[in-house]
Length: 430
Image (cartoon, rainbow, N blue to C red; front, side, top):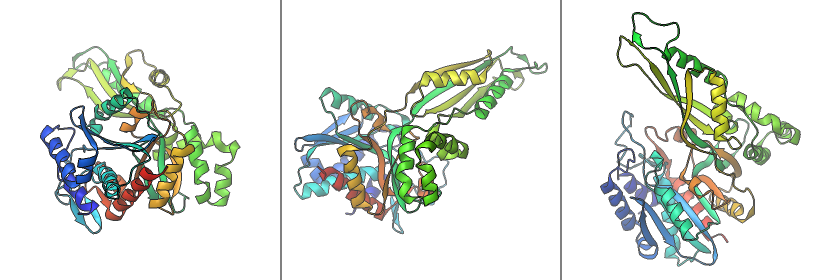
């Protein structure tokens, strides 16, 4: 079998974490054993936290390596796929199906690399821990439980890698050629609730300011006054790394020390992904009010999804939201959340291992650090390792990126095979 056919076989198992199915997880675990007999025979297997897998490959005396991916996928309800999303089609040089990129493709790339190295009787320089969470898509506890278990055992990784950036071409204006975008940090995530209150009553006699009206005014103020944009250290490194691929005139401006403080505000004005790299974002995701068509709502609520940029603290962000709302009848409350991750090193042995592995798989790609704007399971290892990197070793197009969590998610067969090359090189690098 090929890597592509093995990925198709894993896609066919419906491990949708929003609708937990222990039997599906057990089927997936057994399928992995069947597809990778050497991994099944020679690695230490543990099922952790109700469905996550921890596979340990014993190696030499070097620092351990943690390779992460997740087994669960998001639902496909209400999406228009061109065929069954769990068929695992291989068509026109691509594997199509839910989880092809997020994140069963990484599971297969890791396992194919390990299986092939085992067949060659390779002994890795240090222990290799394969950590496959089962509930990442619902912010579950699988990977966190694995991280805690390894910490209790005294395991201190020298390098951790999980999903994140990828090898992309043409996605950044003015940047020529392929770049391998590796996350040094990820933004924190928080849920903030706004609650507006007013007198209820009959809808035939509406007040001058209703609870929904107060809430709407508060939300408009929040959207019109975004959190400040700043040049964080990762974005400064990103700009410096991009230098070789920029037009000389642009490079001179972007990489100049005097221009660094201006870079964040400039990207913030562009907005979109560029803006998300340099500021804490606040998005309205849920609204609620009222109990009947003819009754005034005594309370109206909104949920804000907050993504904290490195350098911002959660308490400061909540206080800025409160000052922006500036209405005593609209309560601002932190429901839950965690801070942005520490920033990992962009130098040293672990970083050079990343550079060498990327060069082995994508010789023309330039290594570029960035801030991951989504959340990953890698954050659970950030307290134990200063080399936690977020990177999917796959070349992907803008269309494939947009299809993650959407219909017709796919990965090119050539990219999957390059991912195997990447992990082989990463595992064997001293």
